[in-house]
Length: 339
Image 1 (cartoon, rainbow, N blue to C red):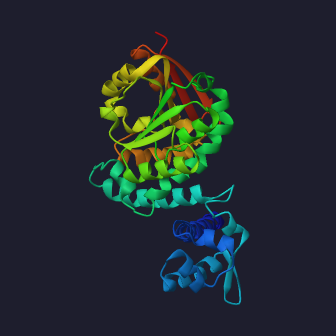
Image 2 (tube, rainbow, N blue to C red; image 1 turned 90 degrees about the vertical axis):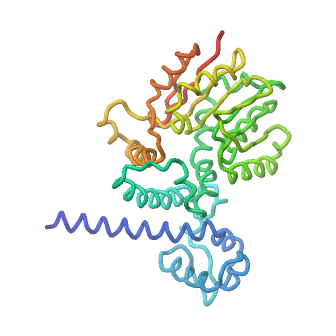
Image 3 (cartoon, rainbow, N blue to C red; image 1 turned 60 degrees about the horizontal axis):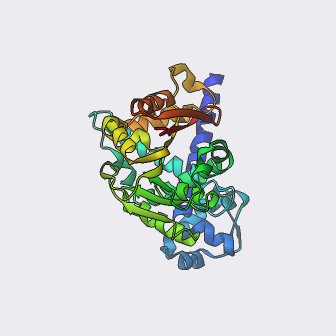
């Protein structure tokens, strides 16, 4: 009985944590945390500044106060330390975890129904919630941008080899363009083209590149990677956590990648590293991959082991190198065209 009571106490604590994340999601996507971070406000003032309905904002303030996200003095609200790190602009923001939690709840609800029919609707699932999709790119950037800049970029010598005026890097499934912007910060001569199927992502990518001063070097287009039409061959073709989305068509895509790659160029794939053995799913950092793979199944995909990516690269005559990061949970495969 004691063990059951302790388990139920743990579940209640987890439910309260999930509710805190749900309340935080509302504050993030509607700009409430950012505005409260600038100056104390009443709920009516906050509604006016954000363009939100005042009655909803008042009720949100009650909930955010109850869960420790904001503090109150008379009728004015300020951010608590917990609310402060919910600001997307905070250097150590918890925004990615909040968005992941709400996206996870959405995927769980959809999978519960899909499991009964076997239907796999595809990536349209990501666009079914209008408040989630615009935050998908920023979530990935805040989560993986620091990993790329601090760990992956310094460890991959190929990146610095393409610091030439005529070098072209292609990012397929570019999202909000964070990867090309990170490359552009470190490779001053690089030109880049990002391709994505979601218009929202292309709009974000174009805007952010302009804001960061890369508008003359980075271009983003909405399109289908299966009909890639390049004016010149690319020095790098990259896919970041996106190759598994098109893996079922690898027999078509890999020869196309090869034909679009310049001599000396490389395919660069960054993927979650799916383990060879099921028991490895309980290793440090691996359990989230198991849940992600469940969601990928609903989208018609599955996560990949880096060895199978490397093998496909060998089949088209490229020379692959596999590098592992974050205790082996992330893999980068660089496949060189040495012919």
